[in-house]
Length: 147
Image 1 (cartoon, rainbow, N blue to C red):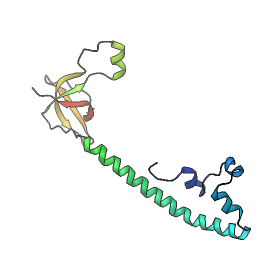
Image 2: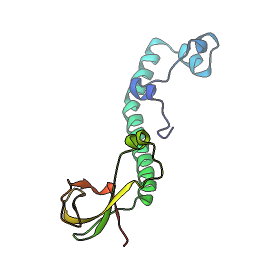
Image 3: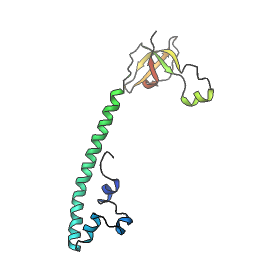
Image 4: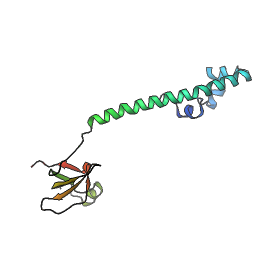
């Protein structure tokens, strides 16, 4: 587990005590049963004070863990960017229709198309070379056409 703490301990501040541990006492149970009520109350207050620290440490470990995986993922991501006038291919059909048609040897890329306009959010307006307009399409559904 990347945060090195159970979700139960982060929520309730204590570890789970199983019924089996009550029958066959562990060291943790033996320590708690030997305490007086006053000592037990002090121990509970102490655990409540350290609970925020435990949660903060777990949050920091989780953020470090996520940053590590984010860096590893981003190493393999290659951004596709196209300029106005570039030739591109667009994906022709979705996976669902691929299975219904049953023609596995047909090309899944259509085109070539010409990039007519570049939007800021990674979308592109493409047109067929003869000028027929196509709706804007996300850049992840395009790839460069090498003529």
